Image 1 (cartoon, rainbow, N blue to C red):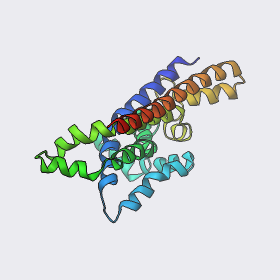
Image 2 (tube, rainbow, N blue to C red):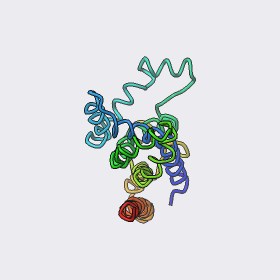
Image 3 (tube, rainbow, N blue to C red):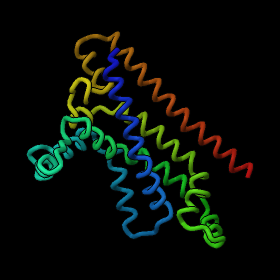
Image 4 (cartoon, rainbow, N blue to C red):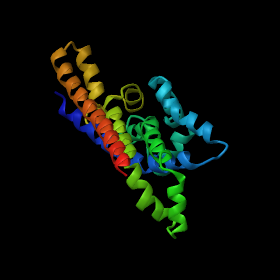
Length: 224
């Protein structure tokens, strides 16, 4: 069992969820209640990571932020930041690739809230911010929690983007999925099996959270 790779994977998944949750809540709510003419294009753009091969996404991230790109040189020169073969770059790529896993559940949760509730809150004198905190978030939390669980599980299992953007640097960018691949290449099936079971366990737990919270939310709304 590669505990160092496990630590990197758990830290990457935790950091990705922490950064992506407020982004997903804000963007999911905007897409749920907004009527902008560019909404369909934004939704299509957010869905791309689900359909494109991870190697394609990784390739374009390398091209955009690598040391040979203008953006990569600017970040390195003025911010001292490298987004290729570093944990920071791996985190940035993870946030991008996991956007649909966080945004789409949040969007569906906010879309399920009747507009009449928001309008009633506004008429009662609540600001939009307080309406979000006191009415919308308590109703949308199952979808948001489901998005966090899916994001966490997907981050743990991501391979293509992680390998292309982060490489396989032990203790920094080598995640559990890459460690499994390395063990298979070395014909160490016992270690590969042990690490694979860990990923299966995390994924199953995440799916259980998604379905359990969905059932509780449906029962809560029916009781109301």
